[in-house]
Image 1 (tube, rainbow, N blue to C red):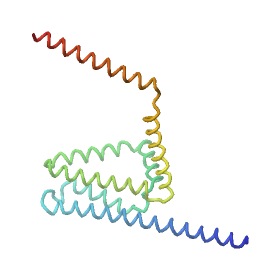
Image 2 (image 1 turned 30 degrees about the vertical axis):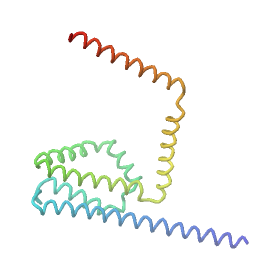
Image 3 (image 1 turned 135 degrees about the horizontal axis):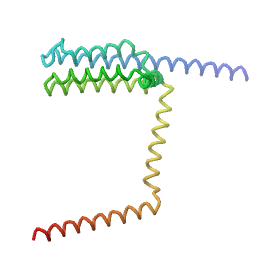
Image 4 (image 1 turned 90 degrees about the vertical axis):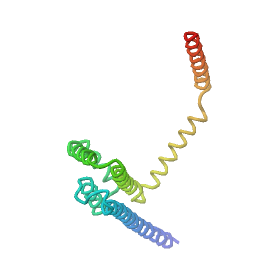
Amino acid sequence: MPEAAVITCLLLLALWVLTMHSYRSYTVERHRLRLFEIRDELFDLARSGELRFSDEPYTLLRSMINGHIRFGNRTDFLFMFFVGLAVRGGIDDMADSLEGRWKNSLATLPHPTRTKVERLRRKVHHEVMWQAMFGELLWVPVWICLLSLFLVRKLAVTLFRSPTQIFTRTIASIVSDRNQIEVRWDAAAACA
């Protein structure tokens, strides 16, 4: 009997490792595929003539996408967390100058093209955040628990407000309505 328990535990451990590895491989490949699709949209935008291949917004966005494609296997929550700490710890000037350069380069584009390029950049950021949050199977239960706690708290606050809060809000809305009526009455009297 104890041998069966040990074998079962080893098989479950092997299944868990296989699942974790497969899930990570899948999410990295999915991440890279989505980034390739976004880069294709950027290329199509330049090919259509709305944007030139030599324009700075094109080269900046293409370089950013290429970097995320190349290092997509390193994009996870802990990496993003430590990058965020590093940015707060002294790389702010470089990030600010890059953002300033991006905004200045966008100013040279016509409005419809600028909107399309900004949309593509937002799609890249969305994809990177998705990969950082859900790229590792270990983080998925954490995010589900945090989301559940947030929703339960919001629901509890909404459902179980104290009678004092309800009474206070009701009185405040009555007073507010009365003041608005008086202001309107005074305005009407002044016009007459």
